[in-house]
Image (cartoon, rainbow, N blue to C red; front, side):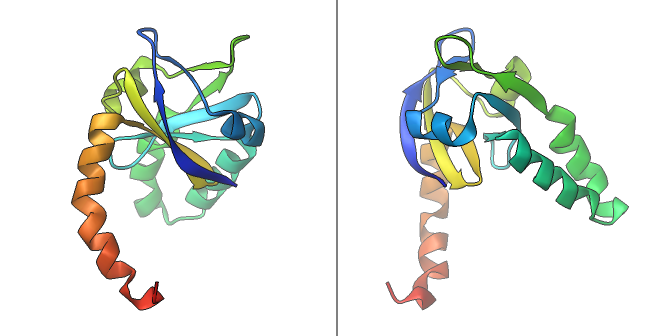
Length: 138
């Protein structure tokens, strides 16, 4: 399972090294695509195929825009000999990725965030998450 948050840097060519635990779980080939809330999603190919299968089962009125957003930005990637992954420019621009990144495990996928956007997002949702968790008795 992919979990945890990791702070990493991306070079000027859009290359980054994923945490070792993520590389071991995902393998050396990836699918990257636009994610929600201004991040990039990264999947192992089999997990992405399952997502695509679920999208195709939605009514066409629903899946048309999802196809454009997620499937239309899909890129297959592989690690280079230095275990670096290249994030395509279009996806870097979508997520406002710069040098400082946060790589977040989400069980079946990885989210790649600009550190600045991640901090803004966390500040925005923290109170909402606290309210949603009230019934969990933590």
